[in-house]
Amino acid sequence: MKLQPLILALCIVGANPAVYATQANKTQTVSVAAQSLKDKLKALESFRAEFEQSVIDQDGHLIQSGKGEIVLQYPAKIRWQQNEPDETLLVSDGLRTVYFDSFAEQATILNTLGLIDTTPFVLLTTQDPKQWQKYQVSEISGGYRIEPIQSGAQVERLDVLFADSGLKIGQLNVTDSSGQISSFKFSDAQINGPVEADQFKFVIPEGVVVDDQTQSD
Image (cartoon, rainbow, N blue to C red; front, side, top):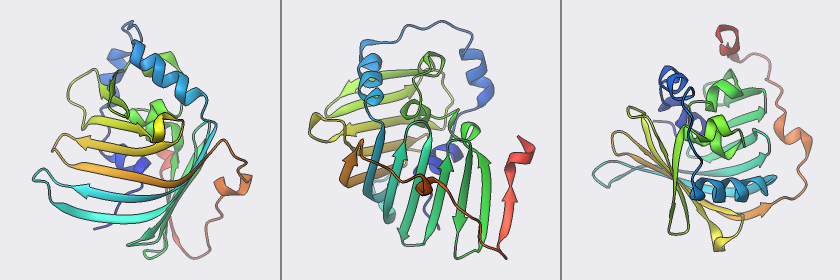
């Protein structure tokens, strides 16, 4: 079983867009905790780190693990390189996302906004008040907990933990409705440093299978 990059993992177990369309019509006040997290993320222009991923089932058993590297740049640019146990690459330039599986020789193309728009991960990429009104944010030890206001979401909780009370994201924990927890621990993190533009570009190799899902959006 392949590990999913963070952004795809959140998308796959994301909430129903129709539910959030209803919620968007309601006026919510952003909490003190949410404003605190917004202010912290607003100062985070870029983030680069190595990561270790683990997936724990509802009984507390480790069922998957992996390693790789991540580069983020506001807004919505991401490069997620998984090196173990399989080599996969996810690259987004903020508009288009390409997920490349070198072993399967397949590339999947998606619209970035549609990929993250209905998951808690969207709050890490935008300051849009309408998005923040869809979630409840509370402070926890070392960071913040993000939970959908509407019930029925497959992602029940996203914990964002910062290292040394600074801007560096130290760990993300994603809990789904089955009780499974996907944890992403970051190391050797660098924040707000220069990022090469080609980090968010990917030329699909000739001869691979291409699944372009942007045409159906």
